[in-house]
Amino acid sequence: MSDRHLSHLPVVKAPDAIWDSIEASLRNPPPAGRPWRWNLRVWIPATAVLLVVGLWTLSRSHRTRWEVVRTNGAQQTHTETIGPGEWLQTDSHSSAEMQVGAIGTVEIEPGTRLRVIATRPNENRLSLQHGEIAATISAPPKLFFVETKSATAVDLGCQYRMKVDDSGNGLLRVTRGWVSFEWQGRESLVPAGASCRTRAGAGPGTPFFEDAPGSLTAALDAFDFSGGKAGGNDAALNTILADARPRDTLTLWHLLSRVDERQRALVYDRMVSFAPPPSGVAREKALALDPQTLKVWKDELAWTW
Amino acid sequence: MRKKSPTPLILLTLLIAPAWAQQLSLTIGNAVAAQTYRTKNMQFVFRVNGCADLSKAQVNAAAEGIVGDARRTTPLHLIPGQPAGVYAINPEWGNDGKWVVAISTTCLNETAGAIVPVVGIGFIRESTQLLPHAPSQSEIEAALKAFTQPAH
Image (cartoon, rainbow over all chains, first blue to last red; front, side, top):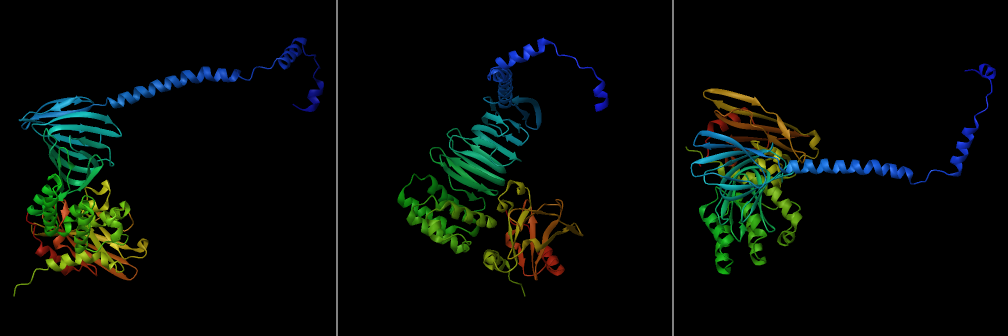
């Protein structure tokens, strides 16, 4: 609208009531807390609703159930589901296959009893009381765990079989990838082609390749689980060192941190007799069990495993 | 005259391979050597050593096999890993017959190669040949002829 048109509009006086209300507002401004109270009236219920929905979703995810297909011989008998806290048992003639969410499967051999502990997206956990399972997991590391009385198998992207008896004595055999076998701060890293025993009260032993000489694996059994008899320990270690092949640096690398200082130098010397240590691995640091040094060495040795 | 087995020489070559760090060479390892779950289903992995600029390295691999009486060649797609210079070999040649993987790499003016017999879900370390040149056709044929499954 132009100024010319505006000039033709009549001037009308505003009603007094408008000025009264404006003045009243200026005399009594609205209290500063008022928008806050309004905000709280909206946000508190909204937060509560979000909290309830979140908790409900979380509890639902904890209750995610896995499908189990039971078979008797070659015959599929029925399908069921299993959730956290529930047990699954097979008799001497039956077996089962369990889907571990979307990340893999667990075959449950005859004569096995296990319990599902957690079915969360970031933690899938079983407890194997006795029997044998074969796990195939396709997921990033540390999403799938199998506890036993003497060790926990932590999946690092792998395929493996594990057998354990009621007392917790057992054997882990890895066919693809890596498994970390852990108990009370003790860790055995087991790559494809290798095995690791575990014993009640002692935890996981030292891993060894399945094609290792029988004399080495027998000596390793004595070394790991003989109860720490010094003389026997020395004899067993001497056999291990004498019978080790280049590939058995897997075993020797683990032994570095499981022997006393006197024995550690012998293990180190035997390892470097197979291949010189890579750059970044100094003798004194390796003997001092410097974690970074040991990791660099392990990563290089893995090319021979 | 019966030729002596090359196994001890090959084993020695494998063991001292890292010592050639300045020369272009290859190191062959099982899938676990790559230290990542992504390669766990790979046939094997290998690493290019001694290349000052890995972005300029060229790497090629092919599966060479005999299935029945037929000679087969399958170019392979390499899967790059971490760190740079590590590659994984995906088994793309089927389950039948006997196969070796021939690898060649060039970096600046150097060339290196390897002939890797494969079996099951791995490779036969004892029969693996690390070469200071690209594998020749006659070397590949000889490796296939000498291929024997390892005793279990």
